[in-house]
Length: 395
Image (cartoon, one colour):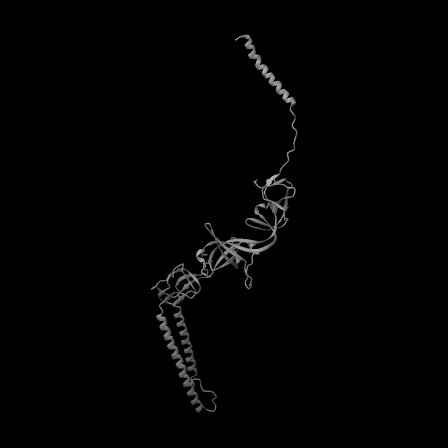
């Protein structure tokens, strides 16, 4: 390689580098200085709802267990062998009022009735005989009486004997009534429309008076005892003794799988005491015909059976002119965040009427048309710039 070629290889890169430096310098000197632009704050993105005054019926929630309105234990009042049991008399069976449940062999009691009737006849005949003797004795006394005697000796005219005969007749009447009552007690009938909860009877079984043989529960109505906080009581109509006013209506609900079943009931009374542990009052809701025995379309509806744990929704007092907002919109110290016409945050203190499960009811502090802020903003202060969520945006 010649000296000329070596010189070109050394000088050429230097020339190119120099030309690049000159070109960059020219571009830097000729560039325009960018103008400063003030960036506008669009505001924090928030969700808002419009406040509207309306009349609102309060809903009070509670839970409880279904129990019978009336439950009795059948106790035998006579001795004997059970000789008849109604078909289907087992736990879970339904019987109407007056239907025979079972019967004790009655022959001994029938004979006792006949003996009592015979004793009564003898007692009545004894009175007739004594009355006749007394009449004869008085005639004889009237014929033979002395001048100083105004009334005969009671023994002469059969006075004590007559009183004794009447006492015997009264005793015979009482004995007849008792034997007839015992005879009636050999047939056990349903005292009301009922469900058999348990039974211990069978044909041929000997039972003694005083033995508990069955337990039945009324099916005309069921009751549910609902514990509620004391603050909820002021919104409900609770019947008091001597007051004919009806209690608040209630809806009993049971969710089974994806199905929701409902029954209509009514608040009938308070138990008149506060639970010492929970400090809650206990109210009683009554549901008529829980088993749907009087409904024609009962086949497609679930029965409200004893022991079910259900939810009860009371229809409480109607509040007029309140504003309902989501519970999440309520801030500390009963304050609400509102977006004004200039899309700025304003903090308002409100008067809270009631705090419910998902909402809060406001009576004062908000106006119709106020845009209530739902979004939580860390460090939110009065006057903060806001931007409401539009369609297609999310927060």
